[in-house]
Amino acid sequence: MAGRALLSSLMVLLMASGCQQPVLDRYQGFARAGSASVKATASFIQASREAAIEADSAVLLRGREALDTEGRRQEVLAHDRALQKRLGLLGDLEKQGSLLQSYLDGLAALAASGEGDALSSSLKADCEALEALRPGLTEATLGSVRVGGLLEEATAPVVKAVQVRGLDRELKARSAHIHRELLLQEAALKALGLALSEDLALTLNLDETAGVVEPYAQATAALPSTWAARRKALLLKGVAARSAGDAAAQAALLRKSFEQLVEDRLAPGTLARLSEGAVDLEGLARQLRTAPEP
View 1 (cartoon, rainbow, N blue to C red):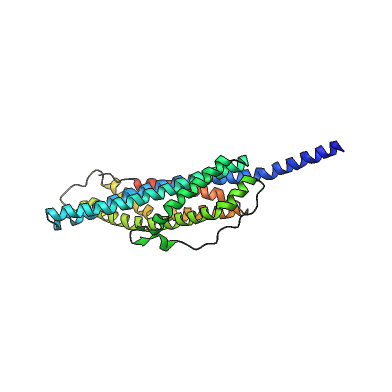
View 2: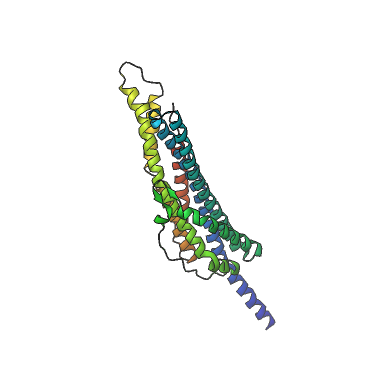
């Protein structure tokens, strides 16, 4: 009888271990794909930051001749203040992404360990830091668009119980909070994509006129040796500019993947698409940051 009881206990342990392994694999896979997505988003934000500076400088240069000395001084100071506010907002958006990445990595660690007060405390701290950033991001304006106006209404995912006790407790406590933050990230990146499109349209138009159209139109002057390369770079950057909404689309996929993960309905291929989207977004950021030859 004692032998049968021992065998029965071993079978229960093995079954529990077998149930936990798929959970571990899913959460670790999601953490890897989510981390790559957040890193790619950070690269996109950096490209947007540079585009904003270039566009603002182009506006200042275009209006400079119409101002006197004092007017120029006041104009550049006003633009600097407005631009610093926008750059600070982009910094907060990067911080939000970093905190989301930390939280997702923590979920994967919790799935592996099953328990851990230190992990739970760290995840709670991530959520508290995200909550502190939320009001500023929600009320922020990028270009002419208020981020909060783009927030979608979506029902928080219903957590399906998992066999890993610590993970189950964490998801029930804070998954709705993380879901709200993923929705906010999506809205902020939508607004950023719209602002980036406006910035790029301005600078590309000016660069094309000054660096491509006018040199080509001058019959008496030889074309610069870099003319063809500059034209190519501007055309490719124009194509990339039309993909400015891709970061928001990637954020939407991250949010939907999280919903599927915690509801235990992660569709086949979802994490692969999330990883592939991150690679594509990194490529887009590189294209946006490629400066045409002078």
